[in-house]
Length: 122
Image (cartoon, rainbow, N blue to C red; front, side, top):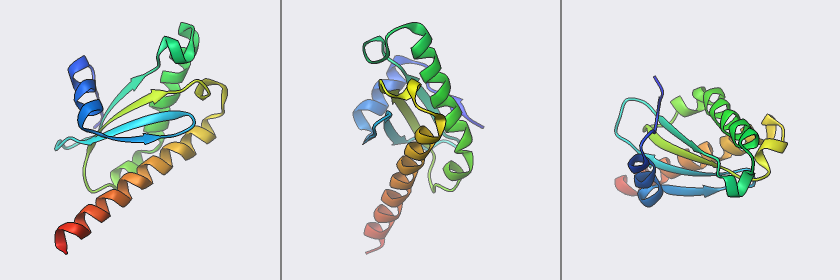
């Protein structure tokens, strides 16, 4: 099951306490949520993307990227709240580049999980 972050407060908590991952097409904020599923929040600002058509396309792309990465997300040890912020280049690029970038973010989160578990054991 996947849920979405809806309230401003949910987004603010992830922004304040979450880990930030910068990319060329998106910025991801990730925070463990202690739930049985991942939650997703997507933003596409007018300042970064312009007109509503571009913002809506960017949000659709980010939701689809998240959906397509279900298998790699399920391999993570914990479930997280994800906030994905679209950058200017996202709507112009093909989904393949954005998929690769999100996979790198998921791999970074997995690496941090193993590093944190290793430091607790040691």
